Image (cartoon, rainbow, N blue to C red; front, top):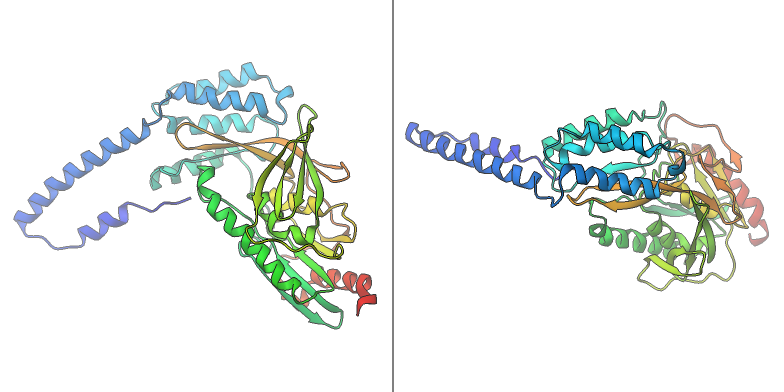
Length: 389
């Protein structure tokens, strides 16, 4: 995330014309400003109360305790190699490439390091490029034409096949590395999605189309809380950890959350407006594609195995694992892959999921009337709801 380029202010100031005397005074002041800025930058880099070595060890400790593949990793070797890469670090910021290297040794592709919110623009750009090179995660050869899906939207589809509610559930990504600061944005997402569902339900659709194409993830809980009226109440799926423990997910009365094996519940998101309870479980067609990943896949999995549901499209991106968040002392955050997702029947999805009905992929985004995936979904819904016409 870019907070803004401080150089823009400097360039604006230099555009003014100065007399020789003014110029001399200005340059002296500017030099003093540069010294002060550099001093503040060094102070900011060393603001973390932890040494670079201890910082790396903190990240490694979290990995060793929680990583999905922790039992197959030689932690002594990984620690030595990672600490060697960070041996010349003067600040915690200097350790990020070493931590990125450790991530590459975890045997999965879903963990990442989110840089702190106060990182200067130029330093962020350089570190982002270096970390991307270390992780060596190639961009897809043919990205989804629906990626990135960022806007909640929907409408009624009125046609010869019937009247159906169409809802796009986009990614729900936090702006801040400090996860708690994202709370208002997540709440807004859940409430906006929920309100759209209520508005469409008031028009009495015969069935629903939930479009997850291009939804590459973020926070699953606002998505589930927002779409929960359509999804239906009950158990939705589970996370299976490296120890074999399963933590369930559920939706109930506007709340989405987790339930441990001993029955303890944690509410992760809740809509503000009281939700509807539909008289019967609606028919739902779920659309997903190669651009559906991470939490987008989790929502698809939440619908999998549900009665009165069928999915359409193509295999998802293959990030159907969960991530735990570890806040590091300088404001960075380590998002660590720690479990595989399973649907309500217990079926595990270690590498994405296939639709019930495969539809050939497109390289460009089609218009709605020429969208083969959408048309297939409408035709299926029409067959299921023909008695209601």
